[in-house]
Image 1 (cartoon, rainbow, N blue to C red):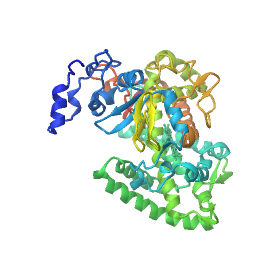
Image 2: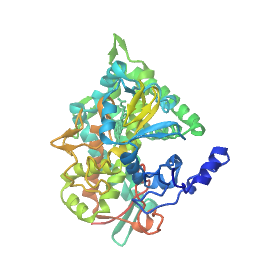
Image 3: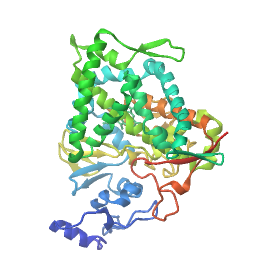
Image 4: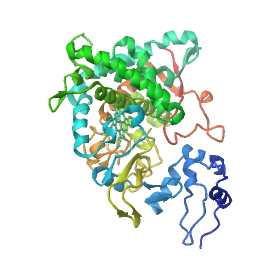
Length: 477
Ligand code: HEM
């Protein structure tokens, strides 16, 4: 016998098909508390799956994931016809078992991004990943670091001109106000990737437009056409470049103008599989994936890093005084508020997990943000603490997820699909933040310009995703 669910009436209407399924049915709760969706006879809190579509959930999903971790570690969502896996240990086990929990067919992105490694599993995935991923790590990446620093510096120098327009950067009484998203973080990661790939400087504006169109194309049928057209235009453009670079490869240069190696597109042009060169279509899909995977995510990481850090004055004081600590800010931000909620998998076989039967071929959502807040792994997980002793913040782990008695966050996934852009994202976010912190004296959040939480006073929580706007003030030297 269950107690009455406060949403019973709406549920009834949903069953009749005439319900307004909007989020407004769920009250906005104080941050950290879940709304009461009723209880089972033994007192176990119930989860009403419509909450997953609600504003309350997007604003702060963590109390709901806590209920799921504690009571339904594999939650069957009958409304959306899928399962959620929410504990850190379970998710890592599934991610490492590429055969039992495959990425085929993910389907959501293939239309716009093309045929990419995201949706491959097993041997074919490994082959493709080795081919492309090598250009984003190790020595190849080291060689590209000067580009990242140079770009951050030149973007911030351009603020002086933007201040004259007075929209996203404005000066008053020795204080500069800047919206870090539009003035820096939105374009910075795309420009880095563009440079590393080897797109000519003059094509970057166009490239940014294609990127934005492809990203909105992932959002649904209305914008998909725009995304598909953008991808087609990108492919046409890349075709010309590929033909040229097959004959005349181009190079990346360090600060002193010395060539440090071929750009990624030039390298891909000379790559062969089984004796055949990669086709233009294959190269374009890889470019689309790298750009799609590395733009919004890294933008979100930079925004969240500054948003969270500056709300914790004791910690920001130490970080701004010692720029080596940006590495820890990066990792703790990705643990506390990662820009990607999780990843879908399909189980290849019938399984039973935590007593829940899951038939083969079911959609199983691995909830990375919940793993990052699993109190079985991270003490007091809702607290943002750059200095927490249970989080691994050392050199990024290539495989595995625990070292020196600490666990890494799950923001990059683990196992065969572990984000190959993790190393470059780390460099972008930390180098970008170091350059920003050198150029901004006494930075603080410009509270009156920021979106507020429902109380109209406190800053809005990050919730699922990342902050869109971040207004900062700093003293002009
Ligand atoms: C903070 C920034 C980033 C986050 C949080 C992030 C997160 C992720 C996650 C969770 C996955 C795993 C997908 C899965 O398990 O199915 C992934 C895959 C991927 N990411 Fe990232 N990513 C970031 C930055 C980047 C960057 C900068 C690039 C490229 C330059 C990139 C390229 C990719 C690619 C190509 C994959 C597919 C890997 C595969 O399926 O083998 N990502 N990313």
